[in-house]
Image 1 (cartoon, rainbow, N blue to C red):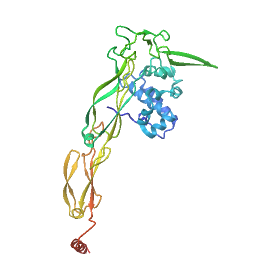
Image 2 (image 1 turned 60 degrees about the vertical axis):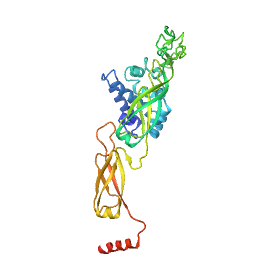
Image 3 (image 1 turned 180 degrees about the horizontal axis):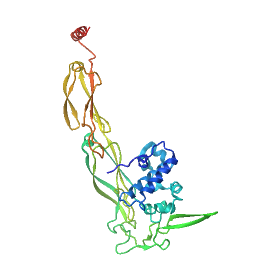
Image 4 (image 1 turned 120 degrees about the vertical axis):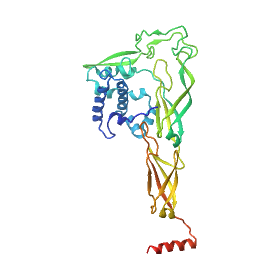
Length: 360
């Protein structure tokens, strides 16, 4: 389960970076990771990641939503198609004159014929919400859930055709699933790529549909899913790729796991560090005392030094929470809370006065 990286971090810019500098930075990264230039296994995923980040950051409306609500705001309002819809002008501004044109830059990544109108069909993302304790943040948690979602039809195996039959190639687009249209405007010609209206972008037409799924290739079902919430997670959305709605002949959606960390009766959290208040009497603060404090995974004895002042901080190194996706743990900080009694007996007052006079 992986969390989406911050879009500004992906592009290597800040929220205050001017849009012209963001364009320049994106173009450098896109040319660096384009699969035609970069043959490493990770190049295509990097290219998708930086392109998605730029599609959001370069759009004023999407950027405003992202700055206010982060990934949850954008993912909750837009599908992947929506994110790129209307962004072609932004990409064309960068790649339109860079050799091969806008369509050719994205053809191998986002669709068969290039351009964002011909993207591969994608299933919907699903949201699953859960709450976990700080103790479970410490150790991680194994999850076993049942998801109600669209799954591949088991009768036609997702083809949408009646068993024993096959779809026919669309004659309108020759099986390409898209058509190109050329418009002349003055001295320039503009080529647009649109999904084929005859086959709805599928490239084929089903003439004898499956009775179980009525030709859709999918049906409502329940899928059991096991996954692990890793140690060190924080409140937020985490993505399990391809576990959303299934779509025959396309790409499955993702499962978004929204995690909420439950409040703890003893500890407060700040990233990987945790904080605990230890009550001591004013006598113990003055004289010193050994006390036992709770940890998330046990207890530990600490020494309250004589003369400890209110709000003295004691650090227990490595007793906090794990760092997400890295080694080591944070620290536990103990704040000494000195309790001063509100009511004293006459005898107690006399004793304190004697102590006070002894310092004069």
